[in-house]
Length: 211
Image (cartoon, rainbow, N blue to C red; front, side):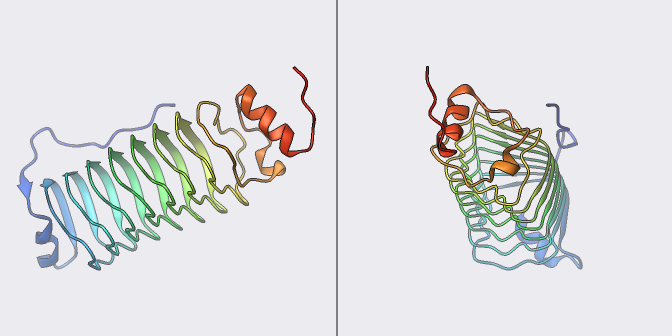
């Protein structure tokens, strides 16, 4: 699946993330943010556009209704960040820590999660289109009542992920690993799985599989 990368200028000036606090509207654009620490803060309706954010920590910060477009996060800590009701388009999360991040009711388009740890992340009631999870830990993540379209789980850990009330039709989980999933047989229809995964689901249905 091909997803659009962030549209970022080649020569971006360095800025301080704290500068966003002095804007009339909380907005940063066309810059690089490095080594910022902005933890346990609250910043509503922040907008980031054409920004690279590198080696920063935003742990426990409230970023509700955030607007992200053409942004790349590299080696950042966004654990337990509240980003509910956000718009996230042409964004990459690379080598990021996203433990317990709350993306509930957000809209995703052309988003890459690459080599991230997003255990216990919340995506409830979110809309995800053209989103790729690549070599990412999603153990215990919650995709309750999500709309999924053109989603890839490539070599991920999806153990104990909840897809309750979420259709997996057209979704390929065959290269990912899990011991258990929360998903109904109805919502599993049309999902691509590996042979081993098919046997596991058959066992859950009470079937006896012979080699």
